[in-house]
Length: 177
Image (cartoon, rainbow, N blue to C red; front, side, top):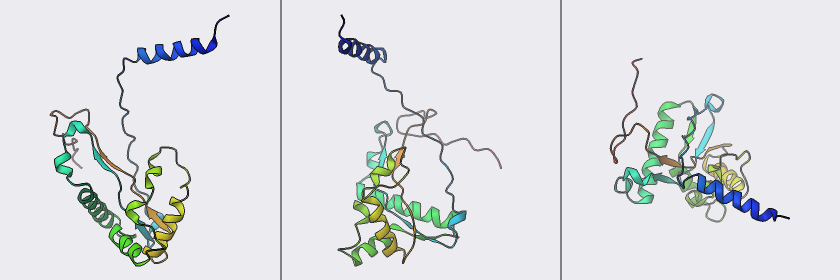
């Protein structure tokens, strides 16, 4: 009689050894356009970005600099792009949310310390508590009763397959319009 536990563990070891120890990075999913048609004339609070990273192979540690300053620059760029590209939406940017949270210290959560990391999971259908209740409170205070929030969960810089040198990314080819 054979021990089924030993056979399973032998198969698992064979599978791991067969992979050669190399990890195959998955290509990022294509970016979907932001559907703002239904948000026209609505107030939408933009929660501050909490994760900004670059692959080590890019050697951008110096360019990104101090974490808080890099996150503030990214929030500024996101806010500028949202206002320019979708002026029909009334965006409540992270600085306004921070001011609202400071005005209600025991009620509103700190927008920079919320648990938005759970939204990075690929299969999130419903925002879990306590993040859901924190978002409701913050959006109601910061957006003067607003109902919607945009939560940029992460900004990640990765090397593309067409990159040539270790610290430089190639620009995507542009077709004439």
